[in-house]
Structures are given as C-alpha cells and as structure tokens.
Image 1 (cartoon, rainbow, N blue to C red):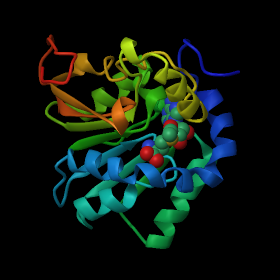
Image 2 (tube, rainbow, N blue to C red; image 1 turned 180 degrees about the horizontal axis):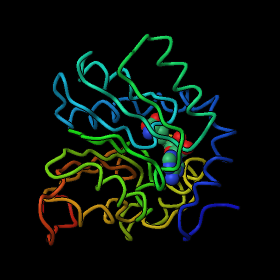
Image 3 (tube, helix red, strand yellow; image 1 turned 30 degrees about the vertical axis):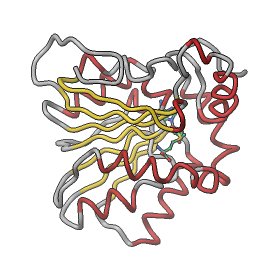
Length: 225
Ligand SMILES: C[S@@+](CC[C@H](N)C(=O)[O-])C[C@H]1O[C@@H](n2cnc3c(N)ncnc32)[C@H](O)[C@@H]1O
C-alpha cells in the first residue's frame, strides 16, 4: 500500500525499512548538512542526555555522542530491526559505552529518562502519531530542548511541486497526512517553537522547548510562538 492521507502505521514502516536499510546511509548523505544544523539547534553540552527518536541506522549518533561526550548519554529508539541492527553495529564499532538502543515502536517504548534534549530527524510518521508524541513528551519533561527536521509540502500556489515532495518522501514514510505543517501535533507540548524552510521549501528545521504548564498559543508561519 502506498502512503496517503491515513494515520502512520509502524508495522508498515518495519516492512518499508526492511528494503531500505542497506541503502539508507548512502541516500541520507545529501541531507547531512541539515542533520548537522538540526543537532546544533539542540544546544547540547557535555554530560547531556539526548533521545534520538526513530534513530534509524544511527547516522546522528557520531554528532550527538561528540556533543554530549563520554559523561553524557544517547538513547536511540527505532521500530525497524534492520535499521537498528546497523545502528548497533555502528555503536559497537565505535566502542561507545553510553549509547543505548531500543528496538520498539515509540508508541509503546519505555523511554529512559531524565532527558535534556530530543531529536526528531526525518521522522514524519512519529510526528503524525499522537500516541508516540504523548509518550515522548511525558518522558521529556519541562524545558527539554527539541529539534525537528523533515520534509513538508510547499504552499498551495506552488502545489505542482508537491508531486515531487510525495515522490521523494514515499519510501520514507507511511502517511502523507500532515505534510503542510508536520510539526503541528507537537505544538501543544511546547512553550517555544520556531521553524525555517530548507531545501527550497520542501523541507524544514524546527526547534523549541517543552512547556512546563498547559495551554499555549502558537504562530504557524516562519516565526515564533
Ligand atoms: C527516514 S528514517 C530516519 C532515521 C533517522 N532519524 C535519520 O535521521 O537517519 C525514519 C525511521 O523512522 C522509523 N520509524 C517509523 N515509525 C516509527 C515508530 N512508530 N516508532 C519507532 N520508529 C519508527 C523507521 O523505522 C525509520 O528508521
């Protein structure tokens, strides 16, 4: 089945990434600069504990591990056995003692806290899963820094470009739902949020902070809450 306007499906993601796992790192090279910029937005310091949501093959681990150092911790969670196996291999080869990997849908993962920061890098399915977000933000707690990157639709007046967005995104997500504002289900959990377009408008980087109380109002365009 191809991704349309339905809810994300973790079981389908497992099947999808069974095929992609081997070629994933090569295909992700063109977005490495976005990965670096997104991780910079987390403002990580030595000793921090960071969650890498849907960590895939662990391509972010070297940057996260370098930022938090040997005293910090990186936790990666991913539903795909094939992606997680490659991530585990990366951790073993590097000899990192403070990188923990869990193979699980985020929706039912036991997320070890406390956390200082949470990275969502090209995790559209998770961004569109209310259950997954509830679990992540419950574990994150107030004032935790977050950074998000991914693909998005361009505005309606450039709508034909969205055919390209769907073609590029298709192998990496099980739903196209929410591609106009992929971050919007996370907003109720945040006290601050800003985002910028990247990749000529077909991608975005967002960053912010988890709120300490309930109730919040947000700006939706390039801007702040
Ligand atoms: C495009 S890859 C991104 C991987 C990694 N974040 C990166 O930047 O290289 C998306 C990942 O999300 C994972 N995924 C999809 N739905 C998930 C879910 N509900 N829980 C955990 N992982 C999920 C897939 O298995 C896949 O590894």
